[in-house]
Image (tube, rainbow, N blue to C red; front, side):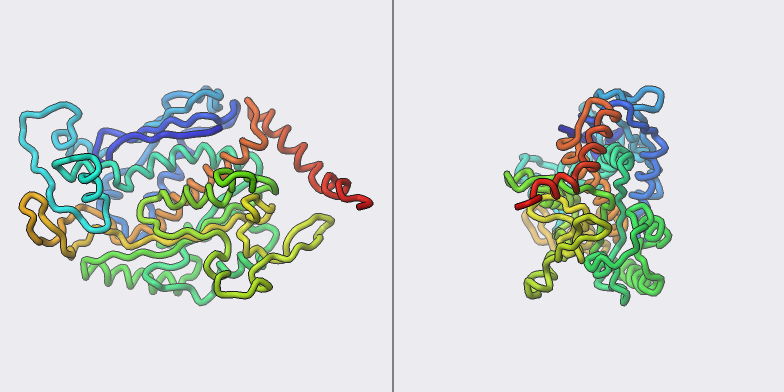
Length: 404
């Protein structure tokens, strides 16, 4: 079983994570992880913090001569802004008095955090609930991403909409209809979407979105949107219908929903299917190139909690950033009086970054079930188990039903 644990506060000294359970002999280096960290910071509409931080990872353990040892991997990402916060975020008591934050921001964990943990300063809620924590997740999940690439599994994403602006060319429907070429991959998808400042696939849509973000900035407002994450090369048979917590779709929904500001997740056609007849919703089974497959992929590559061998498609909705430069109503907890919400340095839109974080979480979910099925102590042993399964799969199904 693989697992990771992150630690650190938004303006603390560093973010750390420990990644455990991956086999030995997987090639990994800091440059690979840094590239994914850079993609997380990208996108038009990001705030001042992205100009301060230039995230770089330091691999502290679990890797020797560029290969995993099969032991826990510990990673560290330093916070450059720590220099300006050493007193406010000191681990030890300080003589200097620091101002306490008493006005919670609607849409954040400010009020629920102080209610749950019995704090008298909202700063204690802000620091850990911040999306800054997702940098450590991206670092941890980059190990999973690199592992999956050894088996031809690639994960990509694109922004479908921001502020309600969609492309006239519905790429998402092309995914559901299985209309893309056989050479399509998650890797190629990112080569396209990463060219855009907002990670969309349509230049006209990009112009409209950037104009809307500029308008939101002038108003002191924020925007949300939807994005799609796709994993290609995923084999048949990951996950199970036997127990609720072994279903691949349930695992993915949990992972994506855990990302800050994500308020909705669907697998495949999801809510579209609720509007259609069954005949318009399910994927007919066919034989193509002497293998069983589906005509379409409205199920998003998962049926009955198990992967079908088609691309895994996940669509998610991110709400607008909750910190507004033109604040909305709140209450000052120290006086219990109506006030305007406080401001905290923030982004105007972060949907492009959220999609990259979702790529990472999807990589983790797939790697988790992949290793459950094919796991070995070394990468070589895992590959041997995987290739044996793949080579025998079609003939095994055919022979099981022969003459029946």
